[in-house]
Image 1: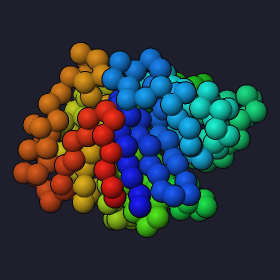
Image 2: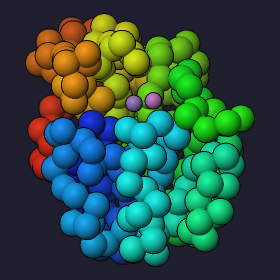
Image 3: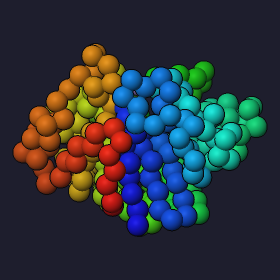
Image 4: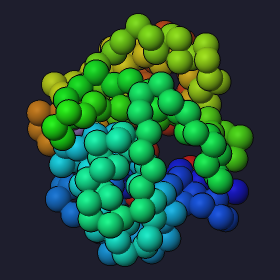
Length: 223
Ligand code: NI
Ligand code: MN
């Protein structure tokens, strides 16, 4: 069974019997965290979209404790390597077949939080289910291309506005991606990104066939 658990902000835990992938583990300083770094006992891979504190977060602490491999851009992977953490460097447009499935690194229009770097997103084939984790990004037209290149079963999209797409742009993204299911993220962590996920759900479901699943921090779904 594959489960996807929302741990608050942009942090998700994607698991099956063999692998546990953590996305952007910002926990300790997250006012909406559903777990502390020390609560993460099983983690085989950590995917980091960029170096901002609310994404890189507790990644290295958790990697050191669990032995997880950090998968990210070459710049973030380099930071991990400097701390002797197992890492796999990739970059935008690249795809690699890991033991759990393939990862494609997607563009994200956003700051990187690390010198010379770029923010990114991920399309992960996990046990035959394709999950697009957009990271922090604006809306961009090539999301339509991603939707043609890959079947998007679950799109995890930021809706907070201010730093990233807001709800109406994210609804357009869901349509361009032709996503079957959409999970909003990166909202309500702080007042500046306060949004109504219910309004987002209504906007998406008016705009396209995507089914919006609103997860509260700590909630999980079976994929
Ligand atoms: Ni950011
Ligand atoms: Mn962010």
